Image 1 (tube, one colour):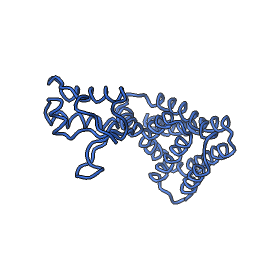
Image 2 (cartoon, one colour):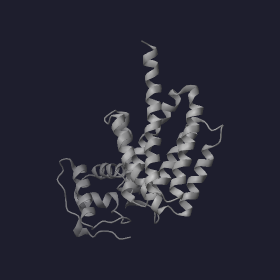
Image 3 (cartoon, rainbow, N blue to C red):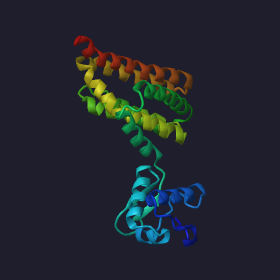
Image 4 (cartoon, helix red, strand yellow):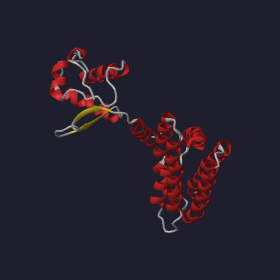
Length: 253
């Protein structure tokens, strides 16, 4: 790992200082001067170089951490300090989770985006999944087969299954976007499963069957069939959930 020289940093204006610190770090990353694994100067040193307060530097680093651009570790040693990282799925997931919770994205739009992304992910996985990838999917399906599995854990395993497919696809950007959309919907999906009441057991059986049919297409390397089954799986479950959530409203009329 390398550290940029003093000449790479220039003082910034004090107005909105932390934003300008962020901007300068972004410029260095875009220019290729800062790369993944490079360590930023310490807080005091960076504040001196940029002629801003340490508080401005701290705020800038917090902002970049939230975006998944850097990671910070306190203490001493080789892992301490602030290092340029690459965690786009974590940042995207956090962003989407907030916006979904705030209803900035209509749920139907999120579902449609999920279908588009997961169709691509599952097609890629059909072409590129390794024996290790397929083994991980089988283990997740086996864990979901436990009849005593509660809804919370089933939901977590369901998310992990879809993430495993995205990871197996081999396209980092598609995978990160797929993971972000799927994980942003984890809580709404859990809420929807509770809304199903006693019908959940039969619905869960249907989800298990869907997963097995998707896996069979992946194992056979049949991307077209895997895409069709994935789309049917996603849309079918959301249709059931939407009907369950509307039922109390109809019953209350």
